[in-house]
Image (cartoon, rainbow, N blue to C red):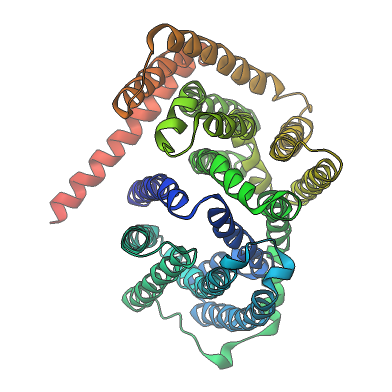
Length: 517
């Protein structure tokens, strides 16, 4: 377990570092319009997940369940059925992508000189998507035996291959959109080959046989994964349709500005979601044992712990964001930097709300209540899309309208639905967790105010070294401040004991590994 967690964190850090280094490099090489097309290509290709998520999102769970129950043959039938349906998915995607690529200039806005390059990029991305379907199924076998670290190491290797290719291609050759797509495809091929090796190495006895394919098993998977596909539709509308609207109703160059403004915020949201998963096993255990009072206590502690870990870096980012973007994107002028920073701050507002309440969302899975959240997500997504479309059509507010609409709708879902729904999942008063959310939010506002005052007092000029130094100091101060603001004496003791227990567990695991050698 410790190895899985540590390896996942390391891979997350590597991927963040790769994206951090590559984003400005590619943007500077391609320009706003071409970079926007690159981002749009990724977004449009991901719509395929709406179709495939319904089966693939739950395949690992069913294969693992049957394998551990000793029904290896049935696990092989699930495995074979999923591989066959993914072959069918791939054929459908190839057909639809060929039509899309042929008529690309009739579907999206792009400069004539970029058409050929964009067609190649889209073709490579669609091929990469199809290959990724099989990589995901092969990865399920590592999940079966709880060797997720193998997948993590494989992902780290793929990220490094992708980064190396992108740097080489854009540095030594004339920049083209399709280079990133080509690098992504090569890294996926590396993943595919390593996946085949891992499957063979694991030797689980779960095998692919065409005759094992069963329609009834696919129906079982479809029924179980329907809400996941539903949520994927909502996610695609929120994070993909806005890029398409921007391309069609504004201009292709604005897509690049939108993408770079959201890139770091997406990373922050991913970190918040990853961290929240640490609390889920304990909450699941307490729910299974019907220990409701302990569950509520631990859930409230999780809310404070999540806020404690996430809020100081968010405060430091908000306080030093303008200086960060000026250093990160040195080829942009002062006005462009100010615009990108303002958009990023608008996009950061929902991430802040999520950091103050994200553990509550885990209750949807713990109590197996997915229908209401799925409907709420879809309503939010449709409201976001419709409001963005209306404002872009009727006003000249441009990207301001898109970012404000997305953030307001996201925060409205959190305040009006998610917090109350968590209480409803536990059959509590709907207002139960609002005080916890409000406490975390007020603590953030107080901390941010202090950091902004300190920044104005001590900072005159910036370099990367000074930015990192003051960012670290602000985070350290934030952790000390929130440790006493968010936690009472009992919770401070509990939090320290939790950290000590985790460190001791890792230390003992290392000792066992060394003794086995």
